[in-house]
Image 1 (tube, rainbow, N blue to C red):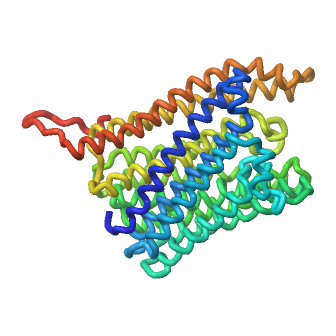
Image 2 (image 1 turned 60 degrees about the horizontal axis):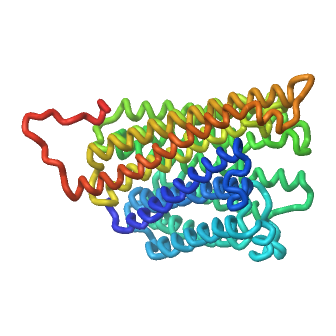
Image 3 (image 1 turned 135 degrees about the vertical axis):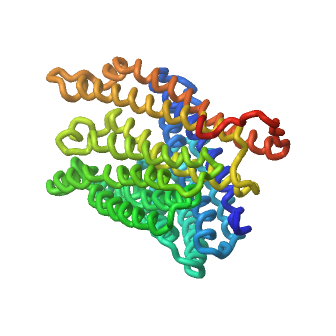
Length: 473
């Protein structure tokens, strides 16, 4: 850690991992409820569990992005954070607001929660992924504005780099497009049209800029490759991400009422969306192959490479599988969509946050890298989580193909619930994979406790004894 103010990233990282754990637990509850309908009912109904699962995902990823910005921006700008105390105040406001929102979901019926939180004054609730009470959305805007002020002033007064500017553009876009969550027209077509301006233009637009900046930063630090080389790659990647991501929004507009030309625009540009992710994969492996140093944090390099590969598979390949209009006609809203969503979010945004946390946390604790024992646990965590997520994706894909055939494609379509019974085996297999994923996350969390213990009580190196190599692991 080069600057004292980088320490404000630490609580953001810790809270992010805590919320990640909560998200996974509620995901497993949801998976069980798919096959055991009254599991934990009425204490945790399905709709409530789903809101908690998706909302904690969004909040912990934002926590991770903020922590990453508070860590990398001072280092890129070569100066202390403009207002460290403001970052800490906003952290507690954000965390408390998130906790109260989840408690509200669990403790109060959703309609009653809307009445209690002023939704009648400015109606914003009731839409998928944007279920947060209006007062929570206002709080998110306040936190985002304070965050952008802090980061923006740090960049303005310090050194300007491509990494910091791309990160800042992505964060500004994130805040700007969230404002459309307040626009809730009574016309359903307009509602869905602008709803995608938040949901799509976040995850397939500006978040990709944030991801690219974070990946570039970690690769610069761990490989020692010239910054100019990394920056050239980053320019091309973000250009492709913006061009394909913005116009590719049209692949959500097929069936909600906008003009027919969106079938062509959406199909063509969303079919190109895998390109920036493929370029990210090539970029990451090129940087590692051209590295000028062997960084002791081998685990962080593994997470970085995993980010590039699984983002390409989840967001790129699985996105392309069902994005063309003639295919999407049958697949829209099926378990194919769920398969794509799980692997895309995990590959692109979960892994890049963990990459940043794994690189930065040892430095925040005063060491360049964690102990070998801790890194071995991290590597186990990576493979457990990644392989189980791939299996979750495959099981959901199989369920989706069967669902589409039985419910939508055949000349004698079956009712929805009948089809759900026929694909139940794949749902059970998903639950088993989810439990393995939870074990991988537990292993990752345990690695930090092992690292802290090894730093306090370092293991003696026996003379003449060959120590295990991280690369071999």
